[in-house]
Length: 418
Image: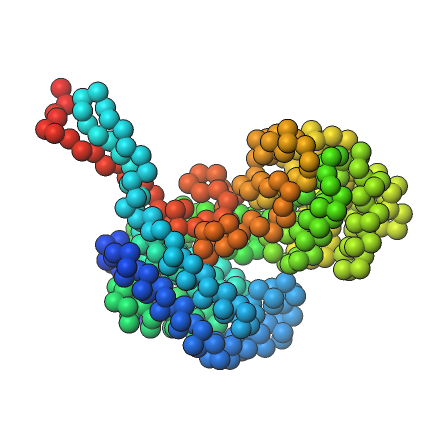
């Protein structure tokens, strides 16, 4: 069978499975999710052995450290996948929820009800945890899912999918509800992106190159974010100790992910008090700073920032630092160079915090907290399907509700239109 025929067969089976999934009751979906979680933990040794094959291949290819980190399936990573599935099982089922009801002058009761989107295609690279996260969220929200991971994780993804499928079958979930495209041939992605008759939504997860490729070639609606250029703004009124903890965590805790801080903005009124101590903390953690002209006056031995640094997603222990004259300048800088992902302000001024929340246009905006909290699991959504910087339909971390749409429901008593 050709790649084209294979992908078409998978898509047709997913479409058929989606009809049965949309009718599953909450109890059966939750039972399947719990079996999936237990199955992953029980199969830890098998999953790590399959993952080792991918890690060995990645080492030979010379993949970047950040990519290898995302590829690795440790015991902790497997436990986290299982915990995400259990948390999704514990969340309210969005399917069938009536979000609004109102009465028209003619007596009609009009409402809106959540329903599954249908078939969701996930295209991702180097993150085998996405296989479990996406499968769990799609199952709970009543959607069939087609998963196409990168070639660097083919063994890991196939192994995880095998455990999930066995668990679903044991729980009575419709067959082919969770499918992994079994080939690393790039043609499979191109064929998948043509199947608008069978696939309702595409969600790519990975680097900017992958996402732009999907957007340029897809006939199906795409929810995306190109990159995470996240900022922390240290306001003039900030508590210096708090600002140091937040700025350190946002950059250092896990620099290779999209919600890590890439640019630190500091109000000129606090810069001379804040930056020297912050520099020492960063230096001890191996962070390379690239600063604006004002920053270079305060910190003598750091590199000068170029224009390209303000829009860079380093995914590494590198940080751009800019001293700003005002909150206006901080917000303008974020608007010009940011990626609509995540921004944070550290401040003791309530009015400034509220203005930052209102005027910063990114998908997640925080007050006095690290950008690292821009994550579906951390925000109580269960395992997230991804983070969207596309404003239509979903914006920010995507959980169960973002995998549903809404239809109108109407109750009448015999009304006819005149």
